[in-house]
Image (cartoon, rainbow, N blue to C red; front, side):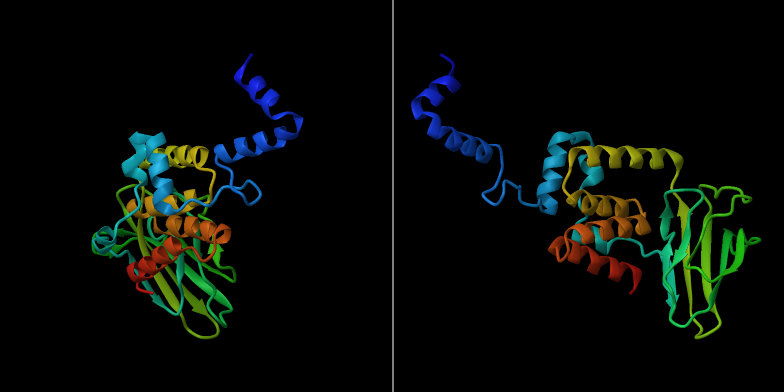
Length: 240
């Protein structure tokens, strides 16, 4: 007689429910509707590192000393906050975006490549009432190894402006990032994957991508202590 048949015979029909309950608990369910508890940042990192050890260093959360040693991006704000790109861009045709400035009717947007100490002809020089501009299809893709400056200033209403200096992540690094995101999303179903990816993005200088991932995590797990700590460190890094 198999072990399962022996146990069923032992407890009788009325004990089946008990055995099933014990089985659920032993497989990791909780006593609150069978749902597992949300994973913390370090617990999720250790679990992922155990499953995918060759990616452990790439996904490791940043330490306090690593944050202290990070170089601040060329980001300035006089009443207008750039959303992206900041630091490094994941694409050579990035979306140019910023937060709305109170009372602004429209925005003057300039994207320029830096060539040494002088600036070249603007790649983008437009005015818009929106808070973002798609990279123009007519323009050549941005080049790896070149620095760029995005400047946005209000027109009409109260004067405000913001500036971001950035470069483009090289193609091999973009491919590796895409692979890392895919592996983490397939191995970690909890929202904490976005918090891990926020740390991983910051390690690569992908600041607006880090903020995007952090916002996704905030929406799923508000008031999380690890996320609050990352928000604080980002504010310090960006001089907010």
